[in-house]
Image (tube, rainbow, N blue to C red; front, side, top):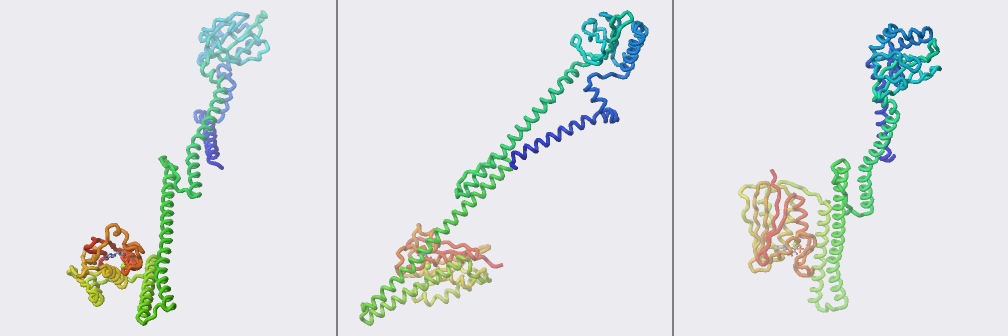
Length: 485
Ligand SMILES: Nc1ncnc2c1ncn2[C@@H]1O[C@H](COP(=O)(O)OP(=O)(O)O)[C@@H](O)[C@H]1O
Ligand SMILES: [Mg+2]
């Protein structure tokens, strides 16, 4: 069932219930006042009969009727009539006796009625006994009995009481008022249902349209959520969901793009050494390496290329495992000063061979422990120092390691006096496959994964890694590690 129908039904039900309750209370009010269940019947039958008689009126009427039938002349007797007047006075009623065309008696209360012609006409059949009549803008209820005097003159006894014209009017207009009321209720009900349902259905409908469009892939639909009600809140949440969905799809597309780029980079980086190896082998087969010396040179080049490829595949494997979070980390408290000194001692033989001086400066005064995975941290240091070694062109070659203790972490700086990195490349050097020198065949050309791997490892340690560099002066790579408490 649609919301519109539901609203219409609920409104109508409310209306009917209200009407029924109204009627019940209207019926029960007389009972509450009189304490008598029969009063309901009395009140309403009287109201609708339009000709109510009070007890004194009823009694007097019976008496005068009796006299009219048996001793009509008694109705001309002043003392008898006075007695009747006295009985009728307390209920604001009066008695009129008409003989022929003349009013022969009229109670004081009915003094305003002078003109006989305005009284109800003579009617020997006595059919219209109880009626309402309007005389000179006044309304009267009356009960009448017509008879003949002994002298055969027409006679009438009329007991009359004035009633409010308003009551009379509302009585005669009652069906009309009731009808109009009922109609206006139906009209208001219809209009209310229409407007309320419109205010709910319209925004719901636009939400539905938006959902359909989103289903078809349009995530840029505009959803209006200016309303301050529940539907406004729903639209707001819906719009929030749309934005999130849009962001996540964009991220997905970005991933997809970088995955494609990764595959193309890998293919390129593997293809280059393999093509070279193939070329050298073909050279050997074709007898180009005709001397022992040439053969040695060819073979050693092939070996170097194969080793590069091996290294590249190793790096790639490590990087992808880190990327997929498939590599387990074994964190422990490591005394950082001792760790760095040991690392430098191990590497110093190779480095001194290349004429590189390594110093560890500013080591912390106290023993400081950091939370780290020993092997992975060694990998980070190796990747950073290998870069420094590769890009060292000066005669005096220095690498300096600084250890700075901060409140919650330790900051390590590896500074070299190498070639430096141009400023526009700095934001990218931690990206995978990024190399400042894009010609991939140069002697310095690595996989472009060294710093990307270092960043992955440091991030897994909840640390930061960044670079500061000046072309021609040198490069500093900084990273942080959390202190163990
Ligand atoms: N100490 C450094 N001195 C100069 N350039 C550096 C240094 N460290 C890194 N770079 C630049 O950053 C790039 C990315 O480094 P890396 O990820 O280790 O890749 P790779 O060493 O395989 O080229 C390098 O190609 C190099 O150009
Ligand atoms: Mg490197």
